[in-house]
Image (cartoon, rainbow, N blue to C red; front, side, top):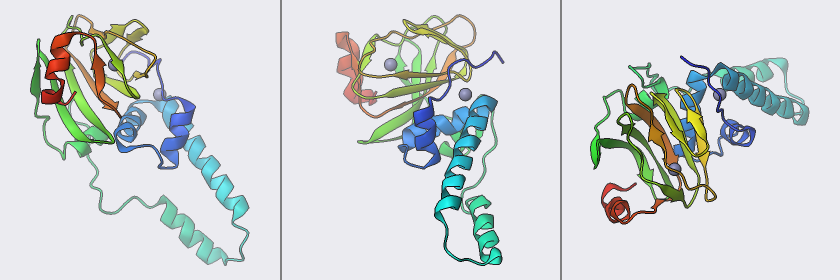
Length: 211
Ligand code: ZN
Ligand code: ZN
């Protein structure tokens, strides 16, 4: 695997650690964490920071036994969430979102496919499959788009993104991501508002495919 050069920005990591990051983005962060040692270290630092704040504000007189019970609870894994293992290019958090099954792809034309993992008015998260050399139509964003590469790579006006890299795109950016030669590019993409396509056809197709 090539080295990851595009990571989770600190503000997003802080929001993720406190559980205030919206679900579509939280899945992208969780998936990146499963692939990136550097961000896992930063996540643990954020968690330790949260713990330190807890310790200094928790001045109440509690017995050592109660304190250790509470601490034990904090470290306990959530009971009813089954742990999913990586399968192929899909890390555990994505397998959990897929409920352990293979993705069901829907064609968007020109060989591009998507599989929506979850979506509502608040935002959506999907897998995208882009054949080598194929462009995702030039588009702008109404909100924040977060894309994580799982297989292959793509390039756009801002740079090159390989496996594990995360691209953040907002209202300011109009871009045309193009999958590189080699294996098809498979990405996990989260958005909180529909994308704005600049050519007529994709805009026409947008309501049908929920891009
Ligand atoms: Zn990272
Ligand atoms: Zn975009």
